[in-house]
Amino acid sequence: MARLKVNNDKIHNKKELIEICPFDAIEEVNGKIEINAACRMCKICVKQGPEGAIEYIEDEVEEIDKSKWNGIAVCVDHLDGEIHPVTYELIGKAKELAAVIDHPVYALMIGSDISDKAEEILHYGVDKVFIYDKPELKRFRIEPHATAFVDFIEKIKPSSILVGSTTIGRQLAPRVAARMKTGLTADCTVLKIKENTDLVQIRPAFGGNIMAEIVTPNHRPQIATVRYKIMDVAERTDEKTGEIVSCHIDDEKLETTVDIIEIAKKDKEKSIEESDVLVVAGRGVKNEDDLKMLEELADLLGAQVACTRPLCEAGWFKNTNQIGLSGRTVRPELIITCGVMGAVQFIAGMGQAGTIISINEDENAPIFNTAHYGLVGDLYEIIPDLIEKIKLEKGA
Image 1 (cartoon, one colour):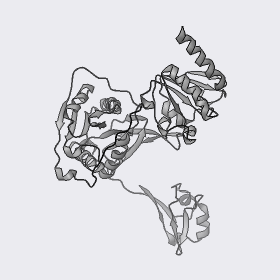
Image 2: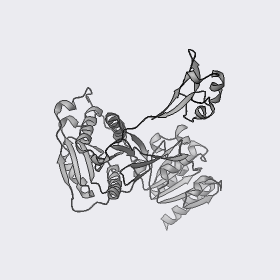
Image 3: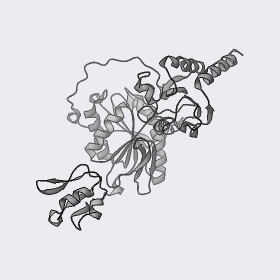
Image 4: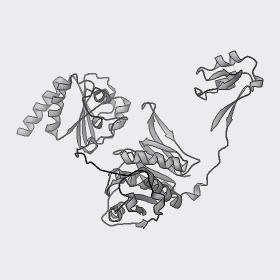
């Protein structure tokens, strides 16, 4: 890490030095100059201030022996043994990364009565499935699950670990990263790997305006979470390969202060991530009642209606229907956007759809840069006409 060191004995004009900083990060406290939390490490004070008054110092970082860490691991996301499909997407990416550095692919499954369910993972080409199968691990509780996860890391030492950005994964990954004192990059959209096993984790930053490349060169394991529908699913084979390894952990290590008293199941509803066809409402939809027009189109196509962030914030949709960086990531075969401008945050959540058809009256709308087919015009004229044509086609 880098830091700024202040040498007060070399400062003769404090006011002049304070005024150099554009972020008001230099201040006088009890007669001495100090750097506060507003500092951006721009080093203007080092370059333009009195010579030697402020020094930029980079702390020496202890290098890690990367050869001791081997393998790309995937955390199996499941509920009572029912494996979330994001797991198979992560396995596909893990196999791709492992091929570059000639590492094995591991899967980690934590739970109770899961040994038979783990057999399914062997159809996807992993080398080993490590399972922690104990009654204390039934249902997800953060403390025992994180303990089992850390136990796996300490024994197996995988170089990189991929975790799904699900309700469980988003709780588990940061807890494990903190215990291992390593880095974590959340919601990666692209993953690459260098020959020295450094994982290049790419994700949108600053509201989606840039794509940040993040590496963890001096810590292991490297941990990344990935949203559902971002990566390609690993191919399933009829034959099983690899092996299942049962892991032992002492019961007392799995003790927790949390007790599950009751579980209330909510009604199952189809998520927009699972839909093959989506009709998306954007800011161009003027009134909430006008959504009935989009719902009619969706019904004819066997689709679901989704939305952009402004409509979700207006209370017209639940947040589970929102597409984008702050919503869900979708990858349908067909998506029809209606009155959507196409902000980068929205595009990041649907850019990999099979076919994108966009309707917007602004011919310069950014959405047309991503769409495969664009219709420039009033959605209140185009959609009713489209509905009638579909009805006629169905009738014929």
